[in-house]
Image (cartoon, rainbow, N blue to C red):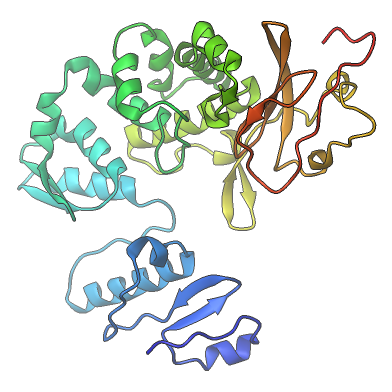
Length: 353
């Protein structure tokens, strides 16, 4: 039976452990050996980078012992996997084993350049990449990489309230080709990417649809449109990932220039560059009810005043976790994330909001 070492042990005592499972700051760290069988779910096991590193080290050493050619990458290996598969498919049929949809999308996009069949095998079955590609229209094949990236992938958040299939069909309808083409241009400027991304979000969240949501009594925060600042950072994330997949080159541009910052655990997304709260919005708050969560920028970042819906003027606040909507008289009924109290926003005499 696996035993758990209590958190708080010294580093020296951790080195002396022989049990397969320890706890380090709340994370499950597994001591991986070839003779051990773990019954832990894959998602739980792979949540920790230490476990991934240990597993990669074990697999690498095993492959080398059996004279199997292998390549180990320090960053994302998806592009390397696809690049190697395409090269091998020039001489023979190739089977790629992976669970990542990103790998499948890249294989479908690039498979037209191969001479032999490509197959992707997952835990759910095996798929003929060429047949998938032939089932798509020419427009769908052309915009596949962008559509998959912009609607959510490993490095780009999903668009709340909008399914990937629905957005894929809408994007390929022919209304926003000029904006999507910017994301397929490997020489596009950052400003062009941001403008195109905001235009695409405007296409997704049409004003009449937004008005219906805003007038509803219950608002789901995840279905509200992003602020302009958040949309800009989102667009930079999507462009960088699309460019990497087109060139099959991980980190083809400096991530810190495209919406990422270096944190404690590596690169972390920049949610927005907007100020925390414009001065004119702070005047709306009652002096008797402090905005307690403004001291924590990870919980809320005020952005802009929205349109008038009925007799109410909407005030938007952007959060990395969600977006919230208030009126100038009271808090609308919305689902809240995090442990804090939403303030009542009161209209002061002389304010136009």
